[in-house]
Image: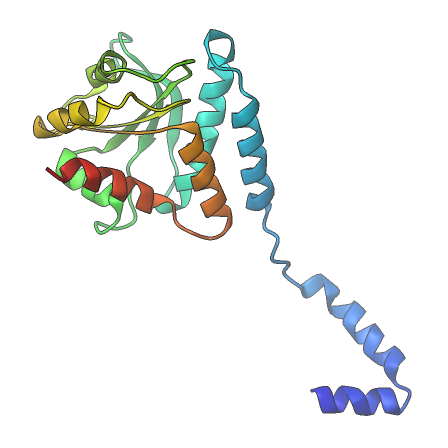
Length: 212
């Protein structure tokens, strides 16, 4: 190709080459996907979302968008609902996602197998401080034989140092609670932008709780 191009230029056919290139420009697929812009926008929204009661609605909104951005392509079809209440309207969950996982070998497949989680519950805690055990434990009221025994928590500063020991105790009862803070979420978004699957982060969290 280089040799033919050089010959064309030498024979004063450069204009034909330029016309040919222009005619093919609309066929070029640029490697700057929209998700790069979306990911950077989510990072900015998360960083500038105020902590505490005033920023609670916005944190729930950006949290749901972050979950979708990170994990939507790991389901056969992304089906989710925010502020989802149970049939008796006595419990309201921040986000529920249908766990129609792609494969049994994926993290979501194992969650369904180990914790019967056909529904994934995601809670958003926009606290100014680290979450404590009482806050984390309060989310277990959403667990049932229908939804399963898995909850994912997004919080601004993560949990207190003793939280992992308490998570391990809950795991012994067959309940898995995994949490991510702002820093981890931003890192996961950046990894997603660069083409890395952030599901491995969930795998690592689960593994750290399984270890004695």
